[in-house]
Image 1 (spheres, helix red, strand yellow):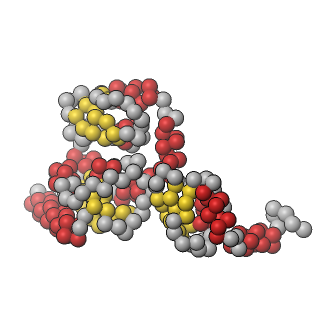
Image 2 (spheres, rainbow, N blue to C red):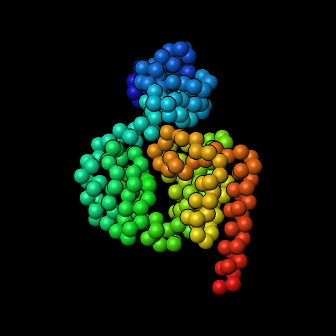
Image 3 (tube, helix red, strand yellow):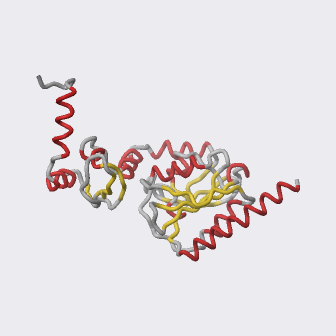
Length: 247
């Protein structure tokens, strides 16, 4: 007897999915705006996909075809568009932050000004969802670690600062939202982490990735530029440790 609770039938259904013709699977995905860019493998193997917005990600064929998962960036953007701008402005005013530019969307970057007079550029989503604030007024403990991680084993790297408290959690969070696989090159405590970050951001070129979080902090680096960045972080780490030992 065939039924939802029959283990034999479940195995048979699973086997039948593995026998689906490749073109049938590709056509089914295209109807949902998804292109299979990687090889057509078994449903349990990792492969790559691209949505009709150009976002790329890696997962199993079964997750996309059977479980009907899709592009996380598009899903994130869809949820973000439902946020009432009034709620965003109320939240910013509560924290003495003013949006100087025109509000175009929560995913767009804008210029903000804190009551202390400091101005900076960041995405509205970073302020609203991550609840970040004025970089100048943030306690030093909130920005005492500089990081450098590689994106999907490519020549593109993410540069930034975080706190010792968050550490790898911040990296995983950004990578997850942007549908990326991070390989941590350096995650190092140092003095004046934001100054170190700005120095590192002068290396390489901005690849202009279509991502949700941290778009301005990605750099395409040559091998020489990467080696120089790593050397700089390591030297600053040594100085940081020596300074703490003398205290």
